[in-house]
Image (cartoon, rainbow, N blue to C red):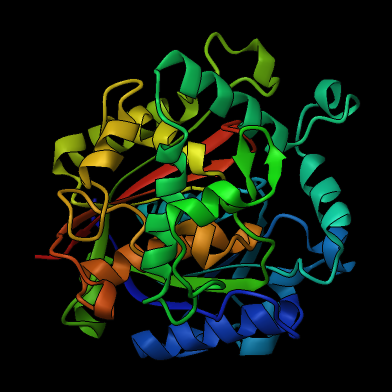
Length: 384
């Protein structure tokens, strides 16, 4: 089977945008095609990762709108909704369309428009992805994060400062990302003194509500060589689910969806955790960075915080994590986040990450839906 290549990528400015979903998607799509030097009428499959354009904006049919707006007719279109892992699910769908031979040129665009809603309205829309048995009791994703963080800190005798250090690191990385929502550094004291949101987690342990879009262009490697001297390949990808009712899990500090999707991706790529040189993890809450590090084998169970203390995950560390600034600093437009993670790894693989550039030929993305309810992990390598 011909390997699946990525030959173009783009990301709009994340943050509070005046543009609506239609404009955000078009901007990312057009910039991605320009990056690859591919015309819109060459697109055979067009996927849009989007969780809730109907709920947020009252806009449906966004893939067809996008095909019309960028001139990609008669491409096959499809909307991918996998909650907050819609972007990762879109990567899986785009990879599958190329790997199966159904398409020779597939464009994936992820986007969400959220900031025009109040925090309460946006939180309620997001909370609707929880199981009805939990939703009716008022449980939200932040509450799950707070309870899991409390359990983790107690079970593994981890200092509260370790979570603050995740926020500090990712804000520092975001300073060098011109498209990040937040481009300012913070210190541990600022993080620890911020308002409590879900004890023990405080304001700086959470990602913001965000507007934005990102795009990737996929094709067979044999086709990629016609368009680009440097490109990346998806060498491994996997997806998995965990119990939708969070309290049914044996240990909430273990994200089985991360473990299972990671194992699938590693097996497909013929690689292991030790081979991953840079990673983008879904730090919607700071505690999730630790849980994914452990689930993916970057640290032993309960010891991710020690790797943080050693500087392993810093941009100049042994395994940089969230060089983009992560969801924490870059922002989290739900349908775009998983795509934007892969945009960062693609740019790292082809040497286009600017001041964020690290020395890496193998990268990984992990996109989490809900509180680990569904997870997609992908491994990307620089083409030889």
